[in-house]
Length: 201
Image (cartoon, rainbow, N blue to C red; front, side, top):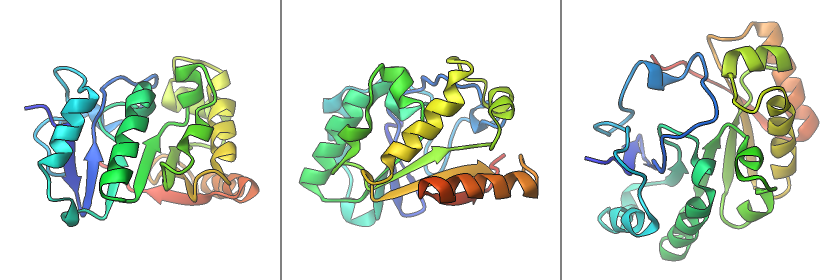
């Protein structure tokens, strides 16, 4: 079974792809096949718009508080489909939409995608992971190399003012308290919320 949609708590998650430009050392894909009420998030094939819409229509959307683009891959790898699905969900149910991302969507798509989030995405949650470029490269191992950290921060900064809620996150077992304070300072500078998320093993 392809788990295109899966429930976590009271939210409905959208799994569009398994592709990702990063190989984070803490990524839960290394230790598990599923999250929440899913069987396996490894996709046999990437779903097209019609398949995603069909899955949504089979659900009772009254059960879900929020729709979240987050699966076993980076959602902006399929940004054009993401935008279409977001428009479909907004028009059909008017649900709040969150994008969980590594913040490298501009590099992935070769363009500034931030303006296309306006009116579609209510919250963007970006994996900051570390306040240091060198540590980021070692921890996240992005295929885009050294430019990745600055591109992620630029993406986050440009989202502020376009998306109502911008959150930058780190994982609670990967940083010192001093590093967490530096991450918090980055968030204060750009006007984003800082969140320390629990490590899932």
